[in-house]
Length: 97
Image (cartoon, rainbow, N blue to C red; front, side, top):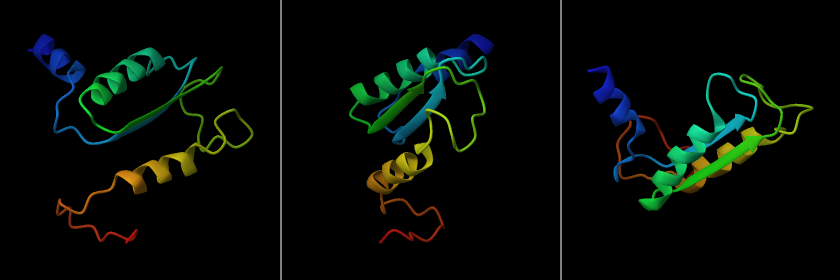
């Protein structure tokens, strides 16, 4: 069962949501290579993606103030605004109209 779950996690499906990922190159929890590979698979399916690997940062770099990741929050918000759809009722009001 674990093997099946691992394979499903590694897969990319056409109905997957747009994905933004940012990770440090020294992250011992979430490998930047794994994240990049996942987003490449999504992108190959036509799913919008944005990926950033920040040199030298480890896991949990916060909002990035004073680091090479400074500004990632604004980048993520811009990505999500550009890729928001109104065709799914999430129960959350769209404040970006």
